[in-house]
Image (cartoon, helix red, strand yellow):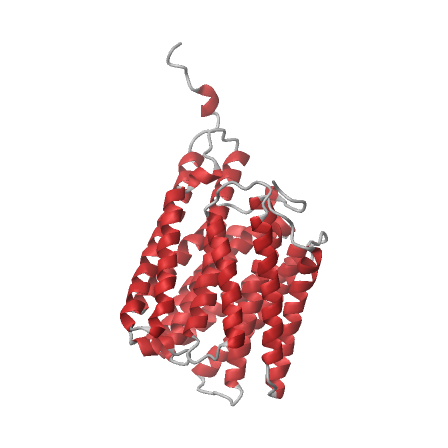
Length: 427
């Protein structure tokens, strides 16, 4: 089941990733509530303060929260890059990211500028603590795989994204909006979504899809070349903005490489060597199709509000895929940590979180996507229905995650030797 390069004995305490995973759906609930508090126009227009706050509730509170939690597990396991004091590191990053996101997003949503000062500072602590440490550890790794190389590129993109973000935040604080401000905004978005998010998704997919789903490996040219090509395109994008050139050719190249990745990922999943039913595949396939649709939409459809594109790429692709990953990671980590402690009576990975609850979550989440996509073409009632379903789906997501964590905790508190000392009542 496990590919070469895994170092399971170097995994951090299970509380390290779990705290991040349990926090993300709470931010999802908060995000959904915002739709009931402000006019629809202020949320659908990407240039309003409320929209900026909503976007960062997602990108920081959900996307970054899950990625930072997963990376603290994956760096030692997939790359052998061990954080020496994992609990202290997790406490610093999680606390500063959580409080920073609340204050930063709140400053835009509620117009409280003092929140922006503290929020931006806390986010700078979270991002630079994480990325400086991750960069140092990953560039010391000797055994290089396509996943490790993608992680290295991910840290580069993350440093650029966070640096641009801090610059933009302090430009707002100082009311110093330069003529090139919106070019920096667009570059910040590109490095954040295509670099920080997509590069990690690609790198992890190269390892996780064959490992968890007993599926085909990606072609070597995809594993070795695609991430480098994406970074090259991001650097070229910055130069195009600087020289005020038309970026359509870059949009075409981004779309081609991402669609090619999706097609190979779907081919791998569809030709699994062990084709048993697995509900998490629904999340992966939904995400990959939305990834392709969103890129084609970006390439061919003129963008007015960017709302549809944001829903397809953010919720349809990224959040769908991350939810599917968490539904694999929590059961796997629970099983692994319990078995490593000597416990014998352990539920299987598929029993850690009930499949019917994962299916319920999936259907409600897909329903929310459906109404979000209809809303711009019909009326705001559909947006409120979508937001309500989004809140419910995140409540179920949180309950499911807590269920898995509680099952682990209940078994972990027992003595592993009890399995050998139980007295047979018939004797």
